[in-house]
Length: 95
Image (cartoon, rainbow, N blue to C red; front, side, top):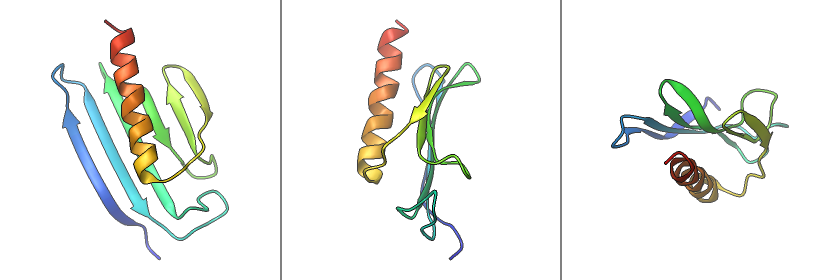
């Protein structure tokens, strides 16, 4: 199956930072066993500060500032909740 975009969303917060969420339905594979490809990013001043993705061959993982760590995928709803929780945490820490 060709990847099918199921959720595209790009918004700017009140400070002009970018929040972009893209999710695709794909055939399950060894690195996308759940059948989803995704990219959720929070961009501040032109730099990604929060990111959740499962790029080719890298599996599910998240970026927080300069750290990258594995992410346990538990569904699209939980993925979205975790991402927005991290965005809020980053914003609070940056005040």
